Amino acid sequence: MNSLQLSGIGMTSQRTRQRLVERLKEKGISNDSVLSIMASTPRHIFVDEAISHRAYEDTALPIGMGQTISQPFIVARMSELLYQTGPMDNVLEIGTGSGYQTLILAQMFKQVFSIERVGPLQKVAQKRIRNLKVFNVQYRHGDGFKGWPDKAPFDAIIVTAAPESVPEQLVEQLAEGGRMVIPVGTQHGEQDLILLHKEDGELKKMNLEKVKFVPLLGGTID
Image 1 (cartoon, rainbow, N blue to C red):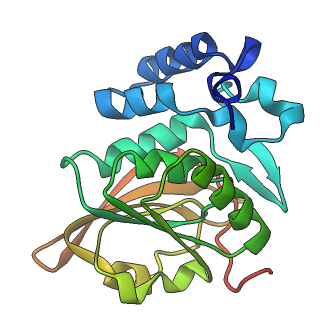
Image 2: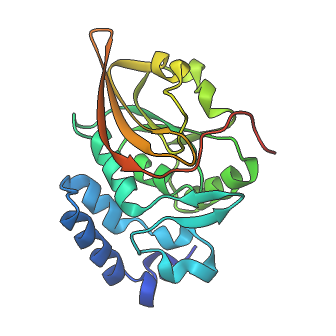
């Protein structure tokens, strides 16, 4: 991947990327580290070339197989929520998807563990991230409801698809003092973005805002 592909031209240029960051600030994203990472991350390489001119719109976009790349505001919002207590060592991501959120996390945490149920999507994401010379991500093709027990506990867990309730297995894999951000709700009804914080063995829950995610499904697709 050459420097022109990374920096982009026209609607994928650094100037367009900076305009997106200004919109994120207007919507309330204030963490300087998150904003800097959003500004430097080439979202256009994580979508099909045919829609790359829309990469820096603040909207979700299709990535195939019924999945989407999340709206930049939601990516920034969820990342900022995990980062509120400062840098942490490891994060579990449920839903690799296009790899865009994964790459954001890889610039925030020492180690990212990313699970995706749709094998072909994860393979493409892994190749993109490897081409960017980012090597602190481990991948698993698996069922997100089960998490990654042999790598637990995790300082942070981020779930990028919506279950109808918080999976207990993920709660068990959250470290003491850890934070989980997860959308919860039905596919066709309202979903709530929820922040969970494990403190003294107790789980504190905060409902944040209404969101719209694809459903979290069990099993795997090869």
